[in-house]
Length: 238
Image (spheres, rainbow, N blue to C red):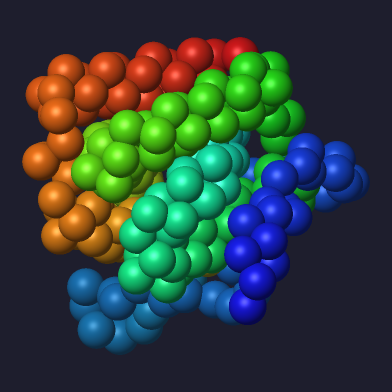
């Protein structure tokens, strides 16, 4: 496969605003029954739609996730040419990580379009920032590029864990009341878990490739992680 075949981020674009319903926790397609304490009959669970606060949280979460995965594809796109030029053995790893990030980005593009969620207003700024970050860390060498991956994935792994905990709270709260929150929330939680695990896999690869041997690692790690936290905070709001 030629380098350009996997470097060009074909999915790097604004999702089209399709006409679909916003997230409201999809009504179940079948009836769930809760056991009757008397053991004589069972009652169907009452369907509970998401509250406005829950919908607002999910809108914000999906917008941030899409922006983060955009940045990841662009970081790898910028890093790959100089890295594989000096370290050809890293070509399969860089291709693997880019391909997974592109898949994540595509997933969140589809979710934003399906639920009519606008992308962050900082889209163009994050595009430029991610490209500069990827290019500059690659010029500093293999270790610095991997240190960038380590820092980004540390923050992103924690970010996804926080979202998963919130969805678990929604599900448990509904179950305690004998209510059904619908399958869409459970499916979203499964998607977030899968993506989180793949992001943490990238973190492991970065550590294996001497991320912490980068010159000035503590400072570089602090700057990149701080930038990630700032970008998340801003994207949640605008």
